[in-house]
Structures are given as structure tokens and as C-alpha cells.
Length: 258
Image 1 (tube, rainbow, N blue to C red):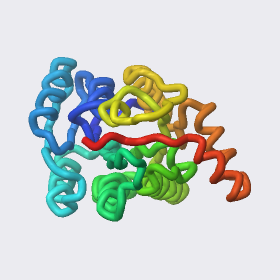
Image 2: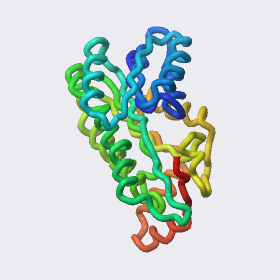
Image 3: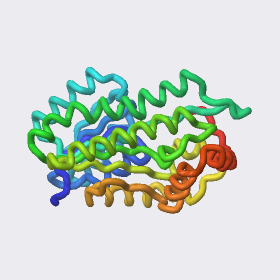
Image 4: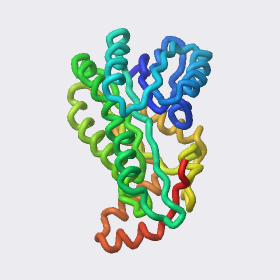
């Protein structure tokens, strides 16, 4: 399978999204980058163009479904999209006393992390189905395996994204469209820097981006890392509810507000 030649990537202005954009950038590759920060996008675009890629950017919040759909349809008509990577995501802080994020924080995370990913992916699916080719990659989290007491809204948004991707993969696989569900653990990022608590098996951004990039190129159905942490959370989730709850309470943390 040849590498993708036209890539749409959200959350591309920093962190994992920016690192992935630079890894996909190469002569003959068209990159279509989406994020809220135009300044950040333009900086990433310049680095990708220096690697030989043809880059276009769109400063947009992925919750803005109508303008995002319009731009995606224009891009796909001009050059069919081979790969769409839904990477944009947020986490909302917990209060110093550990109080949960509340309705506003929880609903905002679902709107960006889950519905925003759908806003990015769904407009491109008709073309992929018609061409019987293409790939979707969804960046969720190992938190998708088990709800966490200090971030129920975040875990819910990522669990929804994981299940959405698993369903799409089963649906689209026979039609020639691959779906990769990415489930990372801790790695260096602005979001990770706001975490106050243990970060088991944390890794550098470059290593995490390499794992994700290789998994996407291999068209793997699921990329979960580090494997030990992903496996632990799956085992915890399979335990009786009371035991499972007791274990995740041992993983308490706080997320500093942005």
C-alpha cells in the first residue's frame, strides 16, 4: 500500500498534530491542516513546505460543522483525500480540591473530542466510499478503556471516539477504506504538562508521533501504547464494578486549567 498523498489533519498547530504533519510532509504530498490558531498553523505549514509538501491551512474550530464541511468538500474535489486524521482534542481542568469539570467542561470536551472528530471525518466518507479507497485515523486515548473519577467528561469523549472508530472500521473495511483507532497514553504535550499526578510510562513527543505515524502507514486497526498501560486499563475495566472503581481511585490526579 502506497503512502497517502493527500492528508487532512486536525489539531495541527502544535503537539502531536504538528509532529505528525511534519512526518507526513514530503515532495508530492498535499497537506491540508486544520486548527484554531492561524499563527500556529502557518508556522507548521512553513516547516512542512520546507520538506517539499504542498500545504493549505484552514483556521477553524472543529465544532463549526458548516464551514468545516464546506472547506473539506472543496479540498476533496480539488484533490481526493487519501487520509484524514482527527487529532484535535481538549481536556478541561479540575479544581484544586479535585471537583470534577462540571456540565460545561464535560459537554465542551464531548463537543470537541467526539463531535468535532465526526465533523471532520463524515464529509470525506462519501468520496472514500465511492473510490473504495482511503483511510481514517482517530486519536482517542487509553482513557477510553475506563472512566476516570477525575476526568469523566474527558474519558467519555474519548470512549465515544473509540467506539465510533471501531464501528466505522467494521463498516468500511469491506469497502476498501481503512480505519485506525489511536489510543495513546502519556507523552510530552501542552495537555500533558497540565497533568498533576503520576504519569506512568510517559514518553517523549517524538517517540509517540513515530508510533502513531508508523501505525497509520501500516493501516493498523488499532494503535494503543504503551501496551502495558493499555492492557492494565482493559483488565481494570473487566473486573467487577466495585473492584474496578477501587483501583481507579488509586490513580487520582488533577488537571490544571489552561
